[in-house]
Length: 409
Image (cartoon, rainbow, N blue to C red; front, side, top):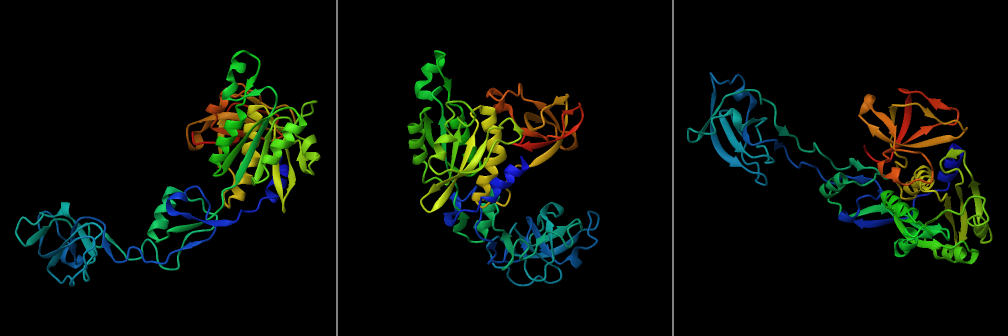
């Protein structure tokens, strides 16, 4: 399995950069470093509402012996700082307002009498001496690296970019993924009556994989269902020529109707590998189709829903993340403990669908149900995939196991 993943990732290079508007950049990867060109905050400013003072003037103040200072003016956010504060003076100040020269402390309003004596304030606590002044440049200074190339843009990143004055964000293009499901037995929602009559099975893989593509910050193109006919399959494959990658589903095993290997071979398909020592998902294939001026990566996923789900997570998703320029291509992994014995007798790397309970060192996993590869209902409960390597045949209750998180529990 590790060798297969290495071959897959070796063929992925980030797509070309483009510019995205600030509000449309979430989920993309930065194509360039973002460096600060401004000082923020631009001035020393107050962290709270209160009084800007000289610390020496209020040192030792308490409720029994308050310090009385003359209030000379008020400063709000957006006002100039004004004249320096001298001994015996205080300036009423609001959160975010520039701290006047000479002041080195802001006394919170709760520790004062709120100027009950007109023109004067009593300071009743010294705890804010030297505090509540946010220095200029505390957030960013010109030339500082704010966000590195490859950073995945989050809503928090948008706040940083907006603060830095970035209007157009340099990002890598999001990959486009053509998804082609195969099989005469499959039906979409428009022909679901055949499923109700017991004459067909629903195409759950197409919509599921399209959602997984979107979750990988990529764009899905659903090509529909190809019949078990070489001509139909070849025609649908040609419709995917402009996509960055092609994902076929089903028809990749060893039956008479399994055409996904034979038809591409007639189109000049270059094999990377076929079959991996893993479960579920063993009959996965990877390679390239010749297209105009390039080679198109092709993933041939098994048709069983759990197999398609697992192989997409293990191979296709990290490939897409790398194509999209993201530094972090793999899911987060955590260590959990089992709550029941787990047996994996075949010498394969097993990926068991699990839910995660608890947090940190107390986290445990439990199976989401039967692990049959043809089952789909347990996927909705799946929060992670345990990774049990081929040299491990069984785990006892309480043993540690590595879990690749699919979503936060």
